[in-house]
Image (cartoon, rainbow, N blue to C red; front, side):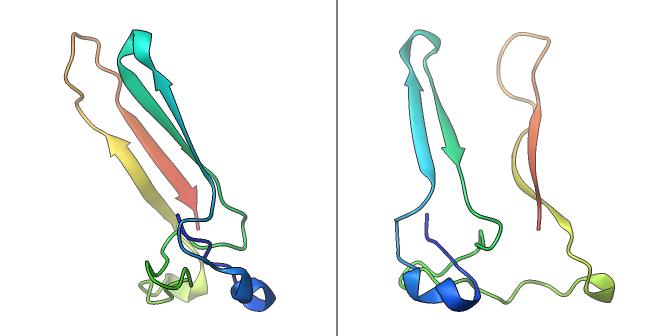
Length: 90
């Protein structure tokens, strides 16, 4: 993850410096990823500078939207299936 800081903290941006924790659960044969960011940081960042990419689509009346960050839809496995959606309030 990159930092994508805003304003006065933009100089602290870097590539692959922020907010990831991976957990391996061998008994369940799965990995869990936890990704963290400060509210002043952006999810959409440049892979070479770490700076925020600000070409997000315009929002109605300047109001930020909720984004789908990840989804597990119709996972393989026995019923009942567990579907998940991760939302972020931009």
